[in-house]
Image (cartoon, rainbow, N blue to C red; front, side):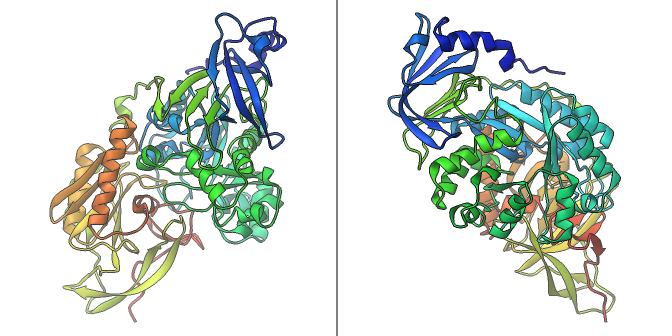
Length: 600
């Protein structure tokens, strides 16, 4: 087990005291900046920060008494000095990158702390996969805290995963050095109904003195929600409207509001602060899911903070939501989240608080990025072959595997259809009349096929259904082994033959995303690690991801970041309709429903 090498505050307290008192020279002084104090919501000009052993020793108008002959001086030149940004809830795997390459991508954007739930890899490789993510996270020059996944499968009985997480696994992981808490408790019906395993996982986390992550993906804010909160989850990021944010904060939870690649839930919830005037200490910003293209081209937590400001939030309040609020929630306010003595010296220099250009990034007292360029090494874990051979299909598939047969003699059928909602995780439960040709139900311009191909145990299983909202045209198919959360293979297309080509291609390359049209591969993103991630540089993966999204557009899709919508179509804990390896799931009732309505 890799151990965290960064010293704790008690280990260096004497050195910090002596530097603050002027008895020992600081390693580094950041000189002449505007100190953004997230404890008091003040901006104090002409301040210095003295750093020793990677931590802050002194902050004040003049740190000259801390200066020695070997002290490095970083000239702030009147710029704002803000704490390194924290992402309170996110999944590294959604970036299509390993922790090392994810860190390399986000460091130039000012992110110095991440709270990551690797439940994607847990579904594929179990506890061993979580350990690999945890170990690579601890190797990085910034802070990556790992939450032990809670729900694999996310909804027992509704899907089959590669591995299952037990309460015993959770208890074991709570002893690992980089584990900060329990990952999002997605089985919200289980908690509300006092499921013994869910409560045992929560209890193991609470006994370890760590934070329980929440995931209440239901609009019901009545007794079921109250029961969920009573079960112990301390935060929630599944809100989509102001009432959701208010309900969570009133019940003592932290409302995490997200801006990911496809989740735009900040604008509709931050009004609880900007218009209703609620205490902002209980609201936290996060990304949840950001793919590599977003990270490289648009940003990370700096993007979220800018967006919150554009939505009318005071800039310093927005910064609190991405720094001290997050640190406090996880019990780390004495370690990260502010520019005050004893804290890790994670500092961002920026010339403007509203547009937030990230000009210099300092992590643990070292300059790690300047002018958008990462200046430090982000070490890689030695991923074993077992983590690279995870697409287990019994055989190549044919178009016949993707046929949906109609009842005998039917000329048309009524189908239950998954309806994609742009920029949101929930789907809609829709019904469409679909034509039948030669006994086979046909897709239309508005509705195309979706299939869930089993890829963990080589069962040969294929579940077929229908989805609307992508707008695909022509003979095409898109396949992905990123299929939250069970991570089988999702194939969406307009033609069974193209769907077979796409599925077989991913079997061949060992996982990733591909798009075929008229028998020709338009795009391929190889994701060899667990079928979820690449250890190639983020810029390379982002370029391939952009090619993939352009191919989606070329096939007629106009949805914003439609890939994220595609990857969540099997997430059987977010309403209303989803597909799993066991069938079509109505998440409102957690029941399987037929793809085709009974023929009358």
